Amino acid sequence: MQRRLRNEPSSLGELQSLAETAGYTVVAVVEQIRKADPRYQIGRGKVEEVARLVEERNAEKVIFDNQLKPVQAYNIAKATSLEAIDRFQLILEIFSRRASTTEAKLQIQLARLRYELAHAKEKVRLAKREEQPGFMGLGVYEVDVYHETVQRQVHTIQEKLAKIRKKRRIHRKQRQKLGFSSISLAGYTYAGKSTLFNSLVHESVPTGKGLFTTLSTTTRVVELSGKNVLLTDTVGFIDRLPLTLVEAFQSTLEETIFSDLILLIVDGSENFSEIERKVVTSLNTIQEIGANGIPMVTALNKTDLLAEHEVQRLTDMVKNLTHNVVPISALHGRNVNLLKQELVKNLANYVRATFSVPLSDEALSYISWLFTHVDVKNVKYQNDHAEVVFEAMPTATEKILGRIEQYSGTVKEIVEST
Ligand SMILES: Nc1nc2c(ncn2[C@@H]2O[C@H](COP(=O)(O)OP(=O)(O)OP(=O)(O)O)[C@@H](O)[C@H]2O)c(=O)[nH]1
Ligand SMILES: [Mg+2]
Image (cartoon, rainbow, N blue to C red; front, top):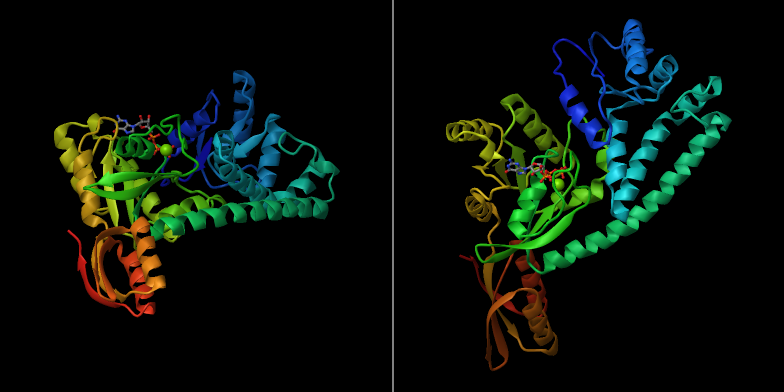
């Protein structure tokens, strides 16, 4: 069910995919063009029509594309004898069904509780009137007690998440120390991120079971022109995701925030207005999570579904929306090598640095540490000095050379490595 203004686009197609992904069979699709009604979201007459349809088709739930206020959900439940949920609750249902890692489960619980918290008082108040589907059992609570109960649960989950996040941060630091550069896949849900990930790292993370197949991150090493790079697959974006959910996924999305390059995947098999909407949503989400400013390469995916001349035309059109566009087919491996070249080109280059350091116990043990952590190219020992040549990412190089200066060493040369 969607209510919209005449100049607003229909999003019933996406709502239907979401509903099917959540395991529902869609028995009727209803649309109304009018202003929002405070009591029902849709008009009073439309509610009666929906109630008749519910009866006729044996429906089990009413799903709204529009956001429902508790009072609207309550009134619709009363009129149809069914629970009414909105798009956000539907997405939460999908996430809950699919979450497999502890972190993903906690993040979804957090999003659910925050949503609950925002509506708790009003929901309990309504449930005290007369219980309706979706409001069951709430009537026994005192308004403030329920609110506090939910708040306490939120705190507990936040604490658990903080622990997991700390671990993740330590891992990321370790990888940075190793001088690896990192690439994060990003893009609208169902664009083909996991398919591309699998093809680049020769793995088999799950793909394509409806929307939001991926909810946790996977990181693997991939070789690009002889360099080892870390590639991360992560959760997809979607239009109009409330900030509570984005925030709940903050730590999963942190992989994107801290990467050296973002590989944006765009589904090229849809019509251009859909492509544009999804690119814009993706770019906005990237900005929202604080990952703007990171170099970006765009893979225009699923070009196997297009005619050759369409591919070129579409590539040019997408170039107006985003950067460094390469048409590919992740499923058939088409142009994947070209994409790899584009990635290497846009990745901050490794630098080759040479330093000289007086031999001391500390310096020697640091040099041996370097051997296990970065690509050491050469070490020459001369009387009381060692001269070392190594390659690493610019940030790691900076840290290493800072350390060398503490051991009274000197930097001899830094060049971009080839
Ligand atoms: N024809 C075609 N289909 C593709 C291509 N790449 C991916 N797909 C299909 O698109 C669907 C979604 O692919 P996924 O890799 O799961 O997409 P995703 O971006 O990881 O999706 P989420 O994890 O849900 O965000 C699957 O059915 C894939 O088989 C392609 O190049 N061509
Ligand atoms: Mg995926």
